[in-house]
Image: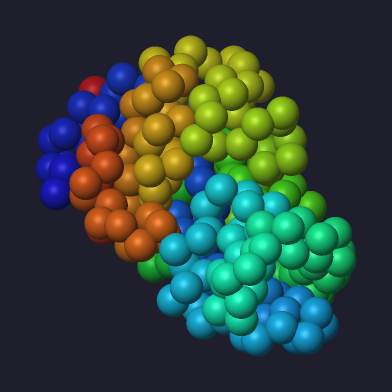
Length: 239
């Protein structure tokens, strides 16, 4: 685990912080499960377990829906799964958007320690941006519903830029919006997507240990530090 001294040293070297949403600030697996299973029911397809969904989350809604369709169709038949997925995708995407907006935030919760961590970062005078692969039309209402929107001067989603994390472009553009250099902009996330994007963009990165990392141990990811709670950022003086 990253020590308080190491976190203090890291924060002293940054001018702003970019924070991921799903799996970092909010446990949204209930929202994903409810919306996706409503979508599957509407398409007359079998339901999918939350444990399966968790391994698919993190690369944007389009990727999530295709992964779910591939998984469910593959259980029914091994023949022409990719073709069937693409044929169903337009209807699935429309259904998913409708259901997700309907339940957005109702089956999710802010992780313990998040508010304390955000308060600490704001108290240290660090501008904050939220950068998620979730569509911005989903992200903003969720932040509002959970009382987190006020911490962020900028909110960007998976459809805000031409590419999504783990591509570095969203981090580079977010740094530009913040007016900070990537080398002095910390990425707080929960998965290899965040870490890979940060490394490629030149940003330092700290990962939480409780989020969604495609079913893989997060401590195996190349990062500058790990925290069990964002509350570990509270009370850390800037050098």
